[in-house]
Image (cartoon, rainbow over all chains, first blue to last red; front, side):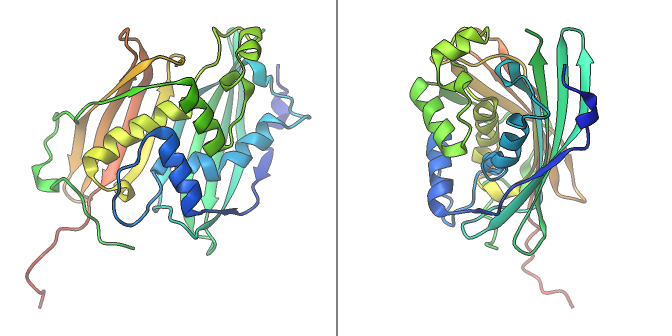
Length: 133
Length: 151
């Protein structure tokens, strides 16, 4: 059982430099390669530039989530503006809930990403489910 | 920011109409490629032995790969990735290599004032088991173009 005292702990990514290469690699990986002319990242690319916040949560030795038994339960994104090459994005993630539910444990994580002008780019909420071994 | 090139005319969007379905076959190679592109190299996605030790049938796809398919279902129809304002859903089942996923969606509502359209989205595997449920997307259409100059 994860200690509920970690609710409120937050993590911040280093600035993520969005490149054409990074967007195209993502598009190729998910098979969403339609050419719209000007390159705009698929909205779910938010998982790429925000990923380090999730990684910091999963590898936080003090919080010690049981990541071998962790699955992604739900995800919600709000997209404030499209992401394009040249963007420099920072993401902050915060643990907002740690709750037992039967044989499971639910961990909520809220993220906010901002650009080089400190303007909001996207927000997300992830719900992780940890199966008790 | 570029002018929007929406493939759909807001006025023609009808509540209840279906989006063209999208079918995706998931492979070990695609999961590896997604791990590289996203940075998520959790071994449950890459290492069969590790995955089985964690109680899984073998490697499983990232939930976010399935959500990317739901994203594409909507943005392919919109014809413009920059119009999507919200996407959410629940990862209801595991996706494993070899699965063929069918993404479906329909228009749930539209609001004339905000020019926003809400979609229901779902993804099921080849056995009809739902792997992505309670999916909701929301798009904002560009302002109506007018050929008349306001006084």
